[in-house]
Image 1 (cartoon, helix red, strand yellow):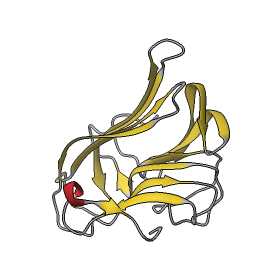
Image 2 (cartoon, one colour):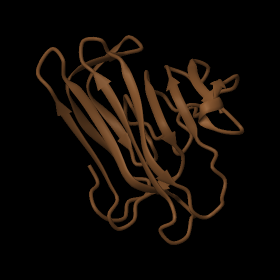
Image 3 (cartoon, one colour):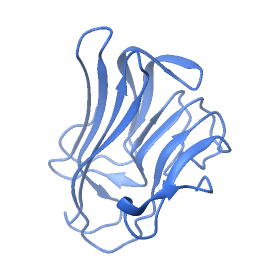
Image 4 (cartoon, helix red, strand yellow):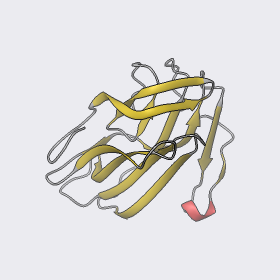
Length: 168
C-alpha cells in the first residue's frame, strides 16, 4: 500500500484475495487506513473509527489513532495460502504516533482475515514508545453504527485490558 517513507492519513482500497464476510456483508476488497484500521465502504473515520458516526457495515481497528510513517516505515498487504484457507494480512511496520519527535516510536502490528472461518486476528510485534504524548487509541470491532461495537480498554497495560463500556 504505502512503502518506505513518510505517510500520514493515507487511505486506499485493498483487494482481500477472497470473499470475506463480516457483519452480514461479503467483501472482496476493503478500505485501509494508515491510521491503524480497515473497513468496508469509503467513508473516512479519521482517528476514531469505532466511535465515529461514519457509515460502514464493518470496521476492524488494531491500533487506531493518528499514525504516520518515517524513513523505513511501510504499510503493506498480502494474501497467502490456497483456497479455502487463504489469509489476508495488512501490516504496519515501524509506524509512529503523529506528534512525536524524532524517530522514538517504533510500532509494528497486523490485521489478519481468514477465509472460510471469517475470523479476524490482531498481531502485535515489537514496539518502542518514544516521546511522552497521549497514547489514547481504539482497538476493537464496529458494526453498522457506533452503537454496535466490541472494544478493549485499560488504564494500565494491555495485559490487564477489559471489555469496553463506551465506544470511545
